[in-house]
Length: 77
Image (cartoon, rainbow, N blue to C red):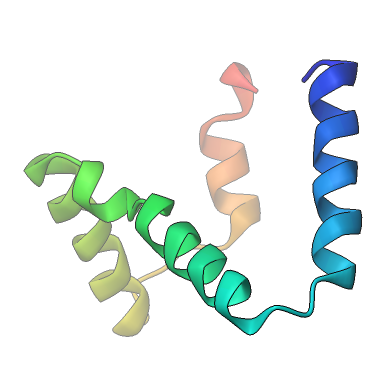
């Protein structure tokens, strides 16, 4: 991120911190909600299945400690 971008962000933060107009605040909130993309919708069906399996495994207690995983993948770390 360039210095100019950082300066613009700081300027916006300062402006927002003093903003009192409720209508503008509501418009900004709506804009933010529209611009926020849910990463889940950007995943493939295979990725979703893998994530869901991982959650299911964790919920049912089928997990391994980090130390075990680290030993298995030690040569690639």
